Length: 271
Ligand SMILES: [Fe+2]
Ligand SMILES: [Fe+2]
Image (cartoon, rainbow, N blue to C red; front, side, top):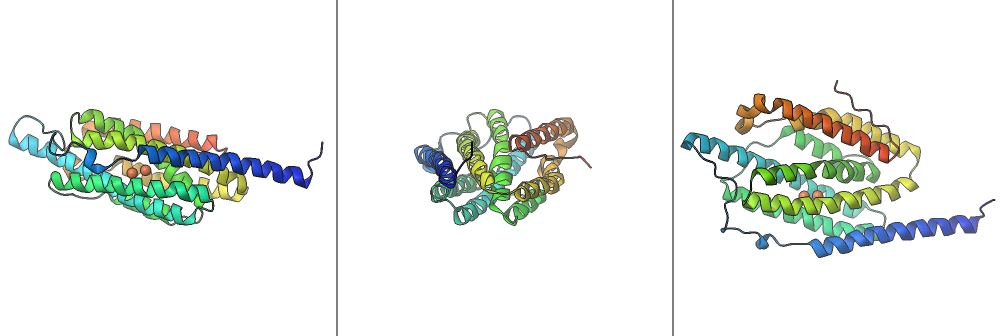
């Protein structure tokens, strides 16, 4: 059976409609989930775990939590910039509408981290590898690469990290923020998967090859980011090393799997 021109455009219209509805759903969901930093229990519970033992031991634990807050603030400052880029670059009206909510979310996350950083005595050393990853992602050539790297990969990979921090810091503002962010980033990741599918339906094979290449090039940096320890957490390095390597391997498998879901072959080697 042949498909004439009218049929083809009908199919395209139907595809566009379904996908646009998909982004509209994420827009509505994000609007419903939007929260205010003032809703958190500031002043009622401690900002980060206080720890026990000698003053020296407690000070060391406090520095470690400060470095956790610093890295999250650093990540959300990058996320704000990437969301603004997507808001300006998205070719679809529904997607642009959605990206207004994501930009607002990332700004609110930054607001929460800034307030928490203030409450724990300020920030400390930033992660140089995270900085480079942010710069590379901001400078990729196409929106397909940007949505894939930022929303499909990074935002999907960070969600387990929020659960991990939250369970290590019960009854703290830090845990409250992580719980909110795991929901928000679930929406950011889910919408990215839906939008990337639409973008790739329209793109040619060259775009997928560019994504594979960008992911391969960024992997060594991403691995260094996962393994990086600021001075404040350097003491934990040897005891954490095997857990870190397990994390690297599970994230490597996850990125390969995500690539396969999009019919891409992302070959990530350790060399
Ligand atoms: Fe965020
Ligand atoms: Fe996000």
